Length: 234
Ligand SMILES: NC(=O)c1ccc[n+]([C@@H]2O[C@H](COP(=O)([O-])OP(=O)(O)OC[C@H]3O[C@@H](n4cnc5c(N)ncnc54)[C@H](OP(=O)(O)O)[C@@H]3O)[C@@H](O)[C@H]2O)c1
Image (cartoon, rainbow, N blue to C red; front, side):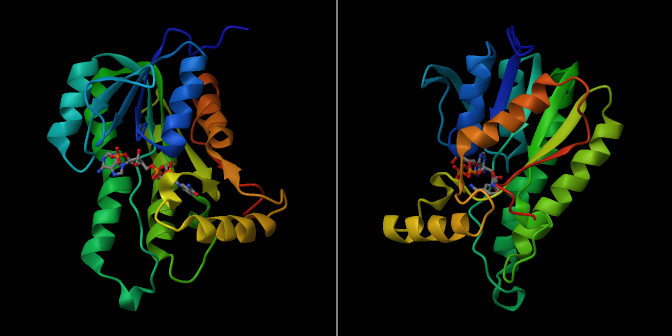
């Protein structure tokens, strides 16, 4: 069966790594024209896909991205900061604010600037994370950013209709987000986190990418939060 993504233009902000790169690959495999965007990218071709530079903390940079691409059909936003989990009393709030600036305010900035170019029948897929609803000590930054992102997705699904807006909420996924840990430490963390899940392992980026594909393809899906977390919220 032909995918409804066939021939559509999809911009993946955060497409330079991890979950975003997997979404880009999955959408391209369904015939979409994909534009990857991230700070480390330059205008050109990356892994066979069109790439453009963007810094989501900079409105002018986002504006340039949308002007360069022109009309498009689906916006996927997976950009996220490297959050240092600490109790509130030990947290540098300027750093926390910068984390919000990348993921929450970055989403808002991108959506606002994308709207003149985004097809009326298109969609927006945002990214939260299971910590939005799974409370853990020291994780207040991720919890509040992700909870706000989920509320925003539902609100904008009403406000921006007929454009559809959905949120994908990953659990622990093996991506370069954990590249800061030494390999041994990373594998031990994945084994522990995965062992505590009903499915017995952490997730892979392509498994989460399937959620974004669903959100883009399914014309009856709007205001949804799609949990792909191996049962982590149970
Ligand atoms: N992996 C997990 O276990 C997990 C769990 C729950 C939620 N999530 C969420 O899933 C999303 C993707 O995470 P990931 O695991 O795929 O991480 P990742 O591999 O580290 O990717 C993060 C992406 O964010 C982009 N980014 C960061 N700052 C940016 C900026 N200022 N402007 C533009 N892009 C920026 C990076 O691109 P450049 O460096 O090229 O700018 C990169 O493409 C994040 O929102 C994360 O919070 C992940």
